[in-house]
Length: 91
Image (cartoon, rainbow, N blue to C red; front, side):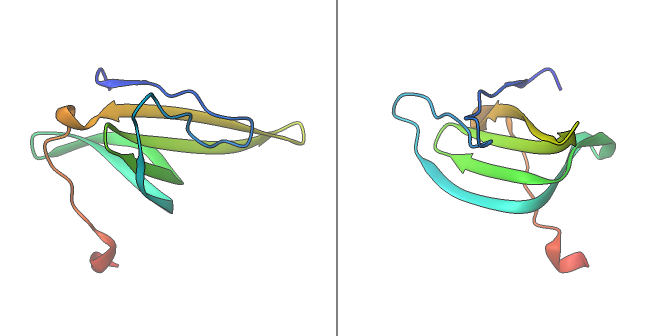
């Protein structure tokens, strides 16, 4: 988790991109497991929204609190990602 930083979001929960940052792809209902070596150490985001940019991978999770939707965003620079796997075919 030490490589993740808070990602600023708009009032609608969309990531606010950095200068020269471009959104390449986005998906909803994405889970992101944290892994150290071959051992999964926890899950960062469950059934959230994921945005891939040319700089970062940004996760956004929403929750309803007192009738209001709240959004939380975390980002990780692409240089800190060593492995990406699509597990959709496993289900």
